Image 1 (cartoon, one colour):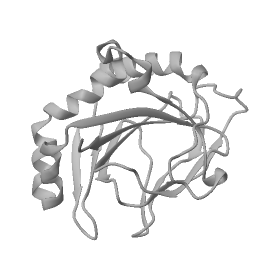
Image 2 (tube, one colour):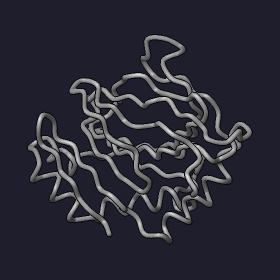
Image 3 (cartoon, helix red, strand yellow):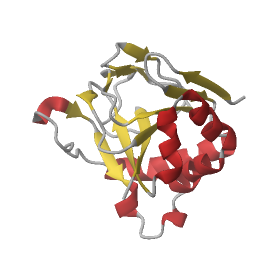
Image 4 (tube, one colour):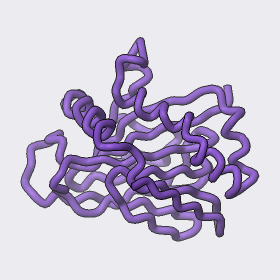
Length: 199
């Protein structure tokens, strides 16, 4: 069952457990299986060094000329119709009233497998949405999110949504694969990230 967990102090962030239903999860995983072999390392914007991150990713907006053809993008769009989520954000903090004024979103999938990580960074957006998924049974350890400005650790959970102000510094702990899988096996940690922006 979907469970909203608002946090207001010291910063406003929202966790939602079991966010999408099984049908939506399966449709996204099907698309992720197709996309994973095509993922590459993409250097982050305004990062201090080349070793600040180690993962692979793929941008969904540039990949799909017609966004309606993507199960992932269509599923993530359901967030906009979630009145309980929007109301919870409004009740948490004045900051999230900007939600209704954002008029551009960008989405990508980041994939983490053995020894992959992302050091502390801030997103270039207004609101950041992160959603985590992986194949079962889980084949890795690690990968928790750390909100580094406030020393808050968010344990990784499958089918969990996190919403934070994009200016909050956050990092991804290193992943360790349990089995000796081939590179881009698809058995690692997926993060579907969506940035809400003002154009």
